[in-house]
Image 1 (cartoon, protein in one colour):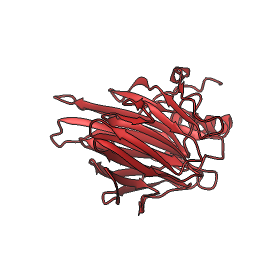
Image 2 (cartoon, protein in one colour; image 1 turned 180 degrees about the vertical axis):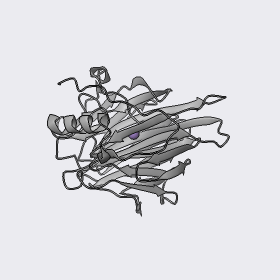
Image 3 (cartoon, protein in one colour; image 1 turned 45 degrees about the vertical axis):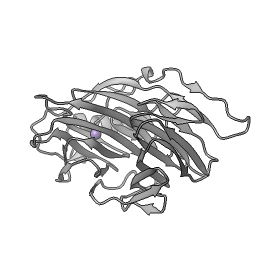
Image 4 (cartoon, protein in one colour; image 1 turned 90 degrees about the horizontal axis):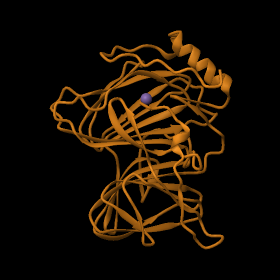
Length: 310
Ligand code: MN
């Protein structure tokens, strides 16, 4: 799923002064959007912060009381050059793709689709009785070494946990706190859902990684600075730990990685390097080229807008 990336993702950031040559710390406000009939808070990308490691997109949806609504529904649409990672805190979704995958996802599980040179997928509401939906949709830019390969899909329902003083973490991508996810990672990267109890906790970081924190429930503070729900707290490279504090039990994502060395060009649901590549993907999707395969969905196929540079 996705929505158009516009200039409106550029609300002012809050720069928190650190020591003159110390590691960066920047807070960004979210932008509200609607994707698949659901309100989302887009925390990444920002004009001043396009990537964190290879993480390049984050849409937080819910918590939403579904009552009789279907919840998140995103019809068949294509991707190139990125991985989609779906993570839920409540509810259930069905992933379908042109590889033939049909996979239910529940809280604590990871759906990871690697688009490579092209794939089509849909996100559909579950037929199960689900009363609420809460989750986050993440994208990871693929490096040049893998971004033209064939697409793949993985589901992980047994992810490792790491324990810290006053905090627990589920590691869904990469390694953290001695736990390693078996999910595919094309670049040095980490993705963790952490639960922080009332009080403080010190998390060990890698100095060669940059990190982002997105609060999904509750609120955490860093050096007395509150990180409110849906704000993106960016931590530049050079830290070997951070101490976070919570006044209520809080859940946040910690996303990190080696700063992405390439410059991704992101348009609609595509990530390439040049306008020509994006144009070709656009034309291939609009002409229903075999490049993107096909899938059966009761939802309507999503047409691409024209690239603004054409
Ligand atoms: Mn998608």
